[in-house]
Figure 1 (cartoon, rainbow, N blue to C red):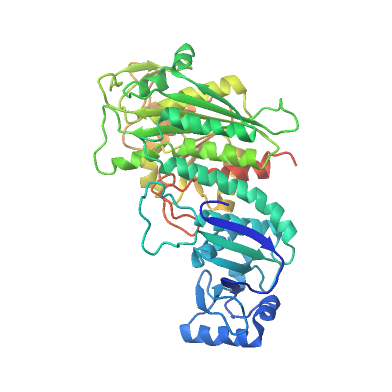
Figure 2 (tube, rainbow, N blue to C red; figure 1 turned 30 degrees about the vertical axis):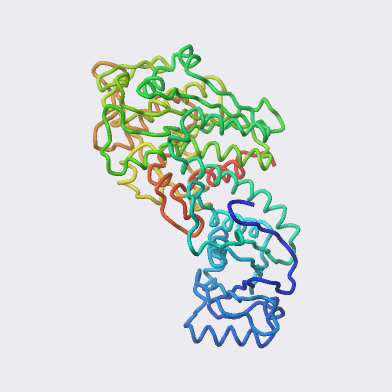
Length: 499
């Protein structure tokens, strides 16, 4: 179960109480199983209702009508799949989300069957994933229900298909991914007075119940490790920072070098002394979207017992402007020994990542590192809010991330890293400065981070546009989408998990 929905699988059988959902193409023809369930009178009813309502069976359109006589169901919901070409490239999570939206708050039996190739167990699992994600909502702080809220609870779906046993196995893996996305969404949506650094670390530590090893690094140890960059960001806040390192050792060989996922976890970003404008500052509770994605991904991998070793590390901090806050013109020393001239205290995320990335590569010697960060407004200007920026020093890793993004709909676009960006962040007084000016802001930020990864294959995902204030779609109606969990899970499953 995930946020108001239960999903089960069963063989094709008679309709029961609630809704019956069937699918048609643009020719409005029903599958043989659908005709058996509805009978000739039911099929005729669909044809007449479609003509009356001008329903053409286009992709992701729906027609709801009273169930025909002789059918126990209350409503018949007919969902369009479009042309043969549309059906050949179905986005299964999107279809599942659309379907769940049409029967929200109701009990429904969904006939996963239509003319053409049979629905595989994996496809049914992806359909269930989309339905779960569409049903998510974050309303734990609302004390009054809406007048039209369903009094009987959430949505209940029974997915009927020819071989339900295979679908159940696939659905267990997809449910693990859905749980990871939901966890990430919950973290992003929480208010900053609830999800301060210590509380974030506590919630991440709950992964131990899934077999994840969790270490929490507190300020005293950060000082011993000379993590001057993250400590500088934190020094203006009454809340002390935390670094959480989560290790999932699922590979057949526990000594196999891990994959490394690193997340920026700024639980609230006021901008510090370089304070942001008031308009929209409330969105800065989501400046920990990268860390949320890492925690959600570790949950997904551990929950489905992925055969891979992964280390997830998040730097959790609050950026506030009190009398102890770090200032423009301060020079801080990172764990790597490199010095940083602070030009703008609102360019704090890269300082957090500098120390966490250095610690991860030094301690765990990973196969690769991927960092996720709501890092720059510049990437939103460049790519909008539907695609993330990808920067990488490794073509193979970049290509695999891009392919995983295409497969899951969490799309990325590769951006350049050139020597001119390095020159832009050179400092007169230190090894580097933390901004390179207005032009190419996302690229100079990525170049800054690159100085802390040496020769390790690395990719940086700037998720400022997709990580919070997300665009609504068929599988997400939440302010925080939990972006990145599905992409990273697919990347690991396709290329790095033992078969």
